[in-house]
Image (cartoon, rainbow, N blue to C red; front, side, top):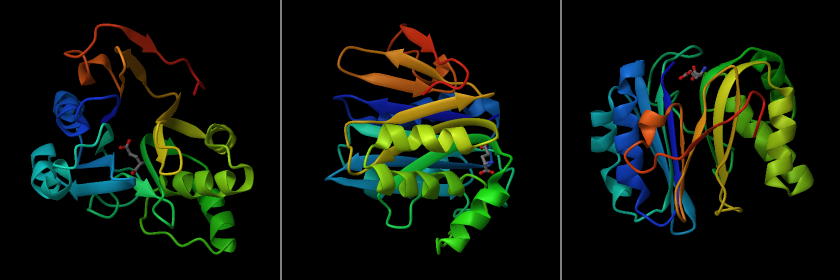
Length: 214
Ligand code: GLU
């Protein structure tokens, strides 16, 4: 089931995330994407194909000296493998970036509600509903952790999800249900991964995130 990598700390995130994605390639995938937070904004590159294709495509943002990043390899379940359906997915205003492995089983009804609210969708994925829902809940509460908690409660199925919001740039949130997620603890930095292979060269201290934990 493909892979997820996250980094937040003081080092350049790009090489750490790309290397983490390469170490998760054994899990199989059809597309890859990366988010870097630098210069007060979320920067995204994504593509159908291999992590090596992503490296080509992300040259423009690779030099951004971001110290926060997340990476994704996708195994398409909803929507064909193409550049648009690759993760990360964003809220309408681009202030939220979200990556997901797994399947949101009730995405159709959640999408119908969002469409009724006037939300427009860029992709065919089940995942994109989660990005728009976080935006909606955050608009209501102004609290990203609470917004994420509300959204995760609404989702049925299997997921590892990472999310970041430009308004809260010192935070990468992650949650899991019926899908794997491990935190790697460093000094002044932390890592996220679908498994420890994503960050094993940086730290040996890891915490397995429990079922339904954020
Ligand atoms: N269901 C999501 C999609 O089709 C995520 C698939 C995955 O696990 O990579 O985009």
